[in-house]
Length: 227
Length: 99
Image 1 (cartoon, rainbow over the protein chains, first blue to last red):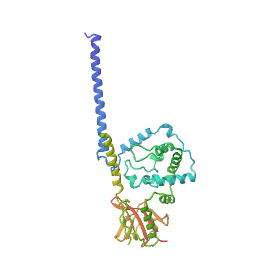
Image 2 (cartoon, one colour; image 1 turned 45 degrees about the horizontal axis):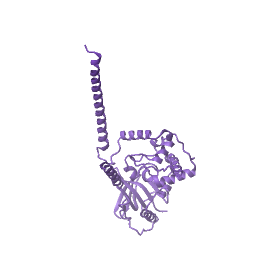
Image 3 (cartoon, chains in turn red, brown; image 1 turned 90 degrees about the vertical axis):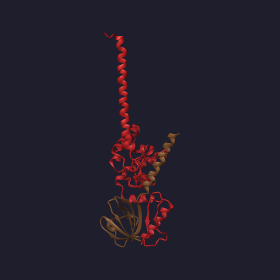
Image 4 (cartoon, helix red, strand yellow; image 1 turned 90 degrees about the horizontal axis):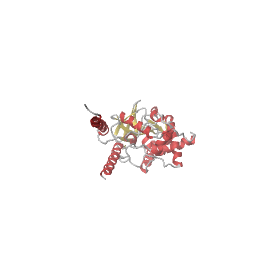
């Protein structure tokens, strides 16, 4: 017959074994999940060229949603969507954002296509369904492990400009061809690009440009001579 | 220290990959329209004729204002900005010359 005092060590030993087995099982699960995640994420190395998997995109969006504080999500756009606010937001977007997001918000730029994750199409529901507060928070604070930098400094001026950007992002699905052309004139350009634009204009007007149209490796584009 | 070095190298590799990708496939030409169909523009340049696919995303501009593919006419001067996509050169933007 086993007395109570004799049973205690046996029970403790059994509980210890169960706990140990559970711990080992948990470690195995974590290890397997980590291994699968590593294979999915780093199978092709650290290259940014493959398309992000659907699982990655879903997890990233879920994490972003969790990462934005609830009070920030509920913030309302402080500025009214006037013509002036829209024009300021459009000019600001052309100057700072279009290099990755494109003037029309499609993300179809050399930079936007090459980022990992890709620059999203801001006209689609995945972005347009975000609250004003979420859009503002993302612009102001950036998103870790993506190409999205933090544009805000917490100051009044940057907040005003970023709310204008929120207004403009809401307008992107209705962007007109005229607005897009106006933005192209506002996109940042180097001296060589300005010169090329001038040469293009002269060529289109029937003048012969004095400057040859050689290949331009440094500008990500390659040009051919006119006939 | 090793961890910081590894992190730095990852950043460098990552940035280099972005730059390498950014250099892919861009191509601009100035020339005259040799032929145009609903989905292709042929431009005569000093290097011969070049074909560009016209897509729904192709932008047409004339005198700084929006234009359309139907505005293209043979012998008209054009500047074509294109990108290699789906094994062909797709016109991103076509600037039209002329009055």
